[in-house]
Each structure stands twice: as structure tokens, then as C-alpha cells.
Length: 412
Image 1 (tube, rainbow, N blue to C red):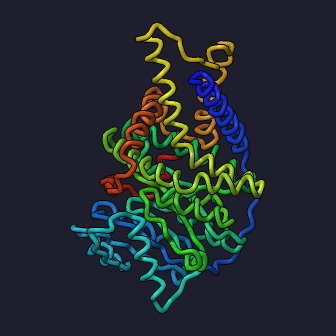
Image 2 (cartoon, one colour; image 1 turned 180 degrees about the horizontal axis):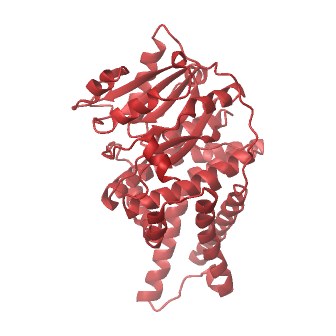
Image 3 (cartoon, helix red, strand yellow; image 1 turned 135 degrees about the vertical axis):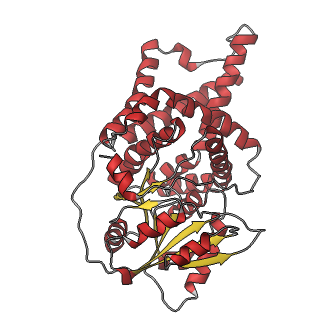
């Protein structure tokens, strides 16, 4: 019985791995022809901030420099339970500081839900809402790109999330490599196939009427994934804009990174429980590859957990019980096939860096430590499974003050 379960799970995991690899190949090319529209859409730019006095000023300067008619966008910074000078700095830059105090409903999702209600009660109504984090920097053409997509009919749009500090440490380099891979071989591949893209928490744009129609309602620890699931369930597929770049600050230390990723995985388990089976059933009923793809993405947290547990069980069986006593399908496959699988995975990360024209020298040196970052997802996910009911939001401290010109100059 146990052997049958193990073999069945190994077949499923292998099939999903092949599926994901095949999809990633579709991101090797990029459509470059785009239709540009006159700037007509108005934007409410929301910035979620909790004690961000060290970095919010740089973002305010950055948003003033956007290449878009100033009368068509306003900036609203959600000063959520702040105890520092975030609101003061925002006002000094002439932007709107919207102060929220609620110690019971803490976290970005709740802050956004509150701000949207405030926004909809204002005399001026906007065509779309854009969301950034306080530590971000946006490319000057960001709103132009969002305007193009909205005019073309998109209702939810995700920009290209890049890293503004990939050379600060080996962990920021690991984040950078991961995001170049995700943007190119996950997001772009799905964009090329007119599939649903997934939201990344920042650099997001929403049609205002859509938000009013379905509400925000995303208050889990991973509000971006939750809203993605809700949108796709309703038949609204988020789009990816490769040219709308936003630069995000990544944690400097492994400890801070582990804490952030633990929060992501805890929230991911919650969203997977809520949406996986409804999306899977809808994909079968409607014969929708789009909904199946997103259901699999939602279940990815369980895929990581299963892989970790099965590997651990087989290791213990071999190391302490003179195994193998448990069936291992992979053990019957040719050794060369294992090397091909490993080489294929290495190829995808290196290909993504090559295609994204990564020029950071330190990042290439840090590549030797990248496997540690990847392997660390297993214990983090394992711990997240047993603590997934912990809804306490943890703040990631941001201290890295960088200007857009510095980021662009380092990119070459």
C-alpha cells in the first residue's frame, strides 16, 4: 500500500515537473511589437507603508518623475499603524498621507481594503488603482505601460518585479536570480500563451470598476495570490507587462529572508486550501488549461512539502533501517536521466539570467550559494505547514535607500 502511494506521488510530481519545465521554454522568446495608446487613463497610486521613514522619501521622489501627465495620477500613502515619521515625510513631498490605526486588523491586505473604501468615498474617481510597496522604485514609463494595457482591454496587470539591491549579499543575489527566472520563464511564458499571470504583491494595476465589482477581499498573508485566485475564478485573467518595471528591496540576511518566506508559505497554505479544489473542478468542468495551471501554482506549496517529506522518509529508511524498503520509481530510471533533469534545472536559471542580460558581477560569484537558498525552502515550507494558522503579519524592515538612476547605471 505504501509502495503504491509513493509510486503514485512520484509519478504525479514528475509529471508536474515536466509540465512546468515545458512551460518555461515558452518564455525563451519575447514579442516586441506593442501598440501604444495616448495617455488617457487616470490612476490612484497606492503605497502600503508601515514605519518606512528610511525609504519612503526615495519612492516619493521617484513617483514625481514618472513620465505621465501629472494631472492623471495622484499618490496615496497608507501610513498603516506607523509610529515613526512616515506620514510627515510623505506630506513634505506633497503627497497624500492616509493614516490608519487598527491594532486588531494588521497587515497589508487589511490596509488596502481600508484605503479602497476611503478612495471610493472621494469626489474624484480614477480609472485604475496601482499598488506599490514603500521600498520600491518604479520605472519612469510604468504608468504609460499600464495605460497601454488598460486601453487594450486588460483589467488586472502585473509589472516586472526586479531587485534593486541584488549585490548587497548572497541572499539578495538569490532573490534576484529567482525573480529573473520567474519574470522570464514563468510570467512571460504564460503571457506568450495568453494564460493568466499571477500577481506579485507590488507593481500591480487594477481596473477600478473591477475592484468595485468584486471588492478587494484579499486579507490573507499573501493578498496578491489570493486576489489572483479570485480573479481567475471569475474569468478575469491577470496580464503581465514585461516593460513595466518595479524595483523591490530584498532582505539582506538569511534570517530576515526566512521570516519573510515563512509568512509567504503560511499564507500560501491558506490560499491553497481555499481555492485549489474549486479551481481544479472548474478547470475540468470548463476544460480550462488556464484554471488548471493556476490550480497547480496554488498547490505548489504542497508539492514542495511532499517532495521534502518523501525525500526525508527515503533518507531515514536507507540510513537507519538498512533500506530501501520503500519503492522508489526514480531508482529504476537510468542515471543519465537524473543528470539531464539536474542540468535542465540549472539551464533554466542560467538561461533566464542570460536572456535578462544580467551584468551584476557579484551575483555571478554568489551563484555558488544559490542552491542553499533553494534547499532552504524545504524546511521553511515544512515549518509553515504546522504554523499555517498563525495569521500574525510580520513586517520586513527596509533600510536600503537607492535611487532609480543608481539601479539603472548598475544594470549597465
